[in-house]
Image (cartoon, rainbow, N blue to C red; front, side, top):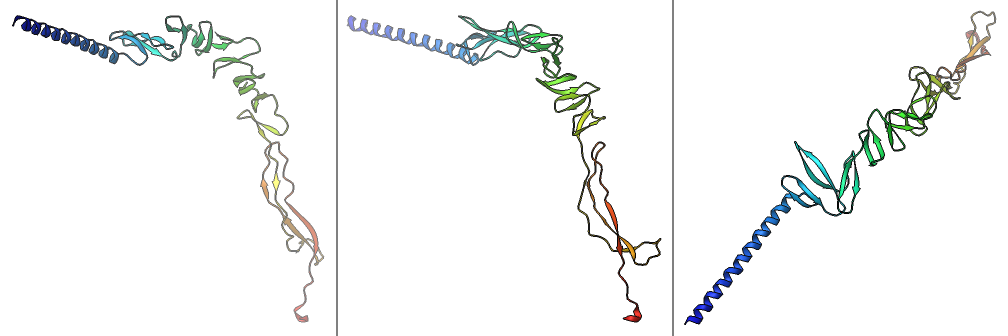
Amino acid sequence: MRIPSLLWILHFMNLTSISGQDDVKILRYRRSSSVSQLCQTGCATCSTMNGCLSCKPRLFFHLELDGMRQRGICLSSCPRGYYGTRLPHINTCTRCKEDCASCFSETFCTRCHPGNFLFQGKCQNSCPKGLTGNTAMWECTDCPVGCELCGKKNMCVRCRADLYFHIGQCHLTCPKGFEPDVQLMECIPQVHCEVGEWTEWGPCIRKRNTRSYRKGEETRTRQVLHSANISGDPCPHVSETRKCVLEKRLSPNRL
């Protein structure tokens, strides 16, 4: 009777041991699950207080402000004002130089803060001789002579105050076929007068100051379709007359 009782006790102890191991596994799973829920997408490891501690492969580790403290995040590319640095064990986002709004690396800016102009990857307060500072893009561009603001290379957007703007260039006088608009300081197309077709000749009317009762004049006209501007070709005459002979009227006594 003692042997079966002993076997029963050992069997019970074995079940208790297995049950305890299962409880430990469940506890570990719950802890792992709660940690994974706290981690943002892309984090390899993280903590509640500090956010991401390490990132998954090819992602960049970056510290962002969260109120008064910093938290780690993992990004596919670095935010504006930072450039990515890849190292054997970690990829990080490093801040650009103070005068760079964005950059490709520590030594090459791609955009400058207002007040500085981008030239060959550097931000400087003035452009080299022969180049003009573009305040729209804050970079040094090859602007035409007399241009104050360029949109892109060799294309002016605003001319000097004493020059006329025409198709991205600045002119002292407007080219042929154009005339200056002194209010807009632009070259506008010349508009020449355009007239329509002549009407039919009107009736023959006797001239007042003539002794001949059969001599008269008849008139025809044409309309102005488009008036000329200041330097356009003026309108030709729109009315003309010619002499005519009045038809002889029969006396009522001869009818």
